[in-house]
Length: 417
Image (cartoon, rainbow, N blue to C red; front, side, top):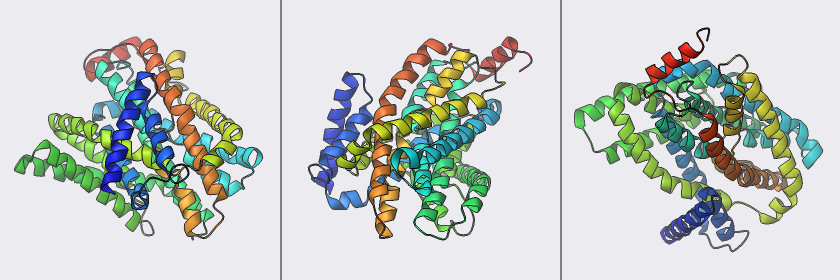
């Protein structure tokens, strides 16, 4: 298995370089490496490596959400909090509902299978969105209205919301005793409890780091390990109390940034390096799950349902930004920035297939859902990454250097806001 990981790393780095040379996100190259080496093409990957794929994908998701926490300050969240929460819930809900309604008509799925597909496709990709927003924040683009921070926060909470909803819907589909209404109603509780636990963990961590002063690399390992344990706690408590472990991971970064800003930036830089490996594993492993035949047959109708979902999401973003200080071009940028699919689709796209296989059910719908999840990555990740960069540099104005200056500038430009 070690040799297999080494081969994947080398091939994915080569693919990443080659695709970036032609201005396509490297993650598409990594995805194709997994497809080619996977069991449906060459069958070259070690089965043991495929078996631990879900755990590896979860770690990759934790890394990117930790980076979000280390980049969101309290003053920024105070200004964008309400709007970011709207963007986290409403567009994903509208997109998921649209796909659920269209699935039986376009794909021949049942209503519940369409709902599972909607819960897979409805999430925004932190892997595409977060690095771009962090770059814009460092360049101070959109700083006056905190647009990059708003998009980054919304995308991250959106992911947690969609994953919780996906777990409930998939559980109902495979026959587990799941009360979907109670699961959805428990989302606010799970988010608040996740924030509280994460902040408490963050306080403990920065105090321990102050006392024992471990090297930054060890600090990052401790933070990642604790975040994994918090996600594990989420699964242990699933039948007792709703708890969002991924939100806890974000909250750890947030509290360390609030209390020890220099330490937070140092840890964020280390996580950016860790993401290089996590990204390779994430996208190569999901590519290995793709059945090319099913993906080919899903092509036109799959693309149609993805496009319908994106249209519904765009409408949701527009509704969330009604009454905001953003002009029409800035609202267009937010809609585009909330469109790429990659990380969550890679992390949970194969979950329905695995659940159906474990339950002894027909795996055809699961293969179709996975194929469309991968198709959504291929269609939206490169175009989304390109559009975010192009529109961001044209639309987002470079604002004042500090957040307080940005806030003052925003008030001056719109005293009634």
